Image 1 (cartoon, rainbow, N blue to C red):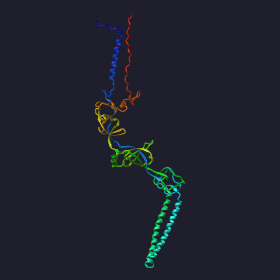
Image 2 (tube, helix red, strand yellow):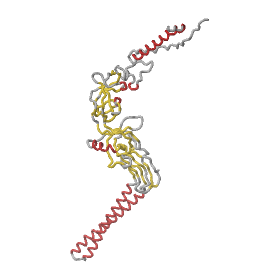
Image 3 (cartoon, rainbow, N blue to C red):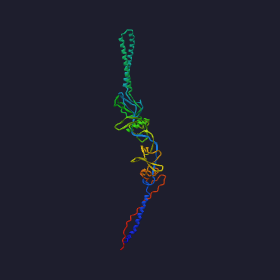
Image 4 (tube, rainbow, N blue to C red):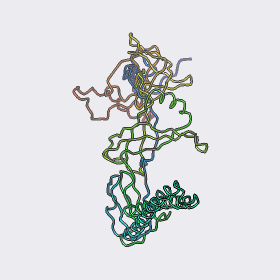
Length: 423
């Protein structure tokens, strides 16, 4: 049986369909050939690299501290009287011994004069009694007076001596009460709010009779707490010398204030599991103020250690690792032991050597044992994110790279139609 001939109208649609299939096949092959060298590609992976360096990285503890005055004194009156004058203004800096308040001293002057008069009277009586004792002693030796008379006169003289001592004490106390009428600053510092006014009656030794509070703020203390697990390190490094503390006061000025650790509490707070510490700062410009909260950095030591950029660290199920670039420009996956992190740096205890080159960006494209190409940070194509430069941006000092060829235009679909034969 002979093969059936093609329909006459279909022959002119067969060749365009075959051409379309051939064109699509060639386009797919071209796209595969132009596929970028990625994680499974055969080309070198572009990366940013850095060196393993030995640096001095301080071992620090960070905390939030409260600023406290180094000394505080609450000023009260020790005598009762009328306040006649205030010798300072609120908030003024005073020196130890400066007069702060003055109480009416006239009653105490009268008391002092009375005590001194009593003392003078006793001294006169005592002089007379001692003269009688000397006269009766001579008479007693000549048997002109009895022994009982001489003993009575001697006892009277000794009693007057005791009265003289009591009068001297009363006069000294009256003089002290007079001195208390001038209330002086107990220490160098800055005064606070004054709670009394001139003309008020001030009561002596009244627990509620606070006149003013004086804070010493140069030097000043900062109190903070650290977790109890750092107790051993604190004891170890403190035995080697004074530990330095840096404090950043709140505000736009980020200059640090430097001081030393001066106090470590003798017990751990059982309710919080923390250890209380205190640092002392000279505070010459008075940037630290009582009641503030400040960021505290306690430096335990400043050892020289191996460091890498923290961005070089990668984490897997087996632990942390980095990619080391060998001399033949191939990547090696190297497990590392990280001792601690310090800002943009990671301190490495084991796994790499000083001077080795490691991948710091672009790790997603790296395959162990495959070649890599070291580029700068700007030319690495965005590193891990895989994002390239935005459209229209040009690398500084470089000619713009030619854009990738666009995909071929989509051909219109061809629908075969049956041509009708003329009758």
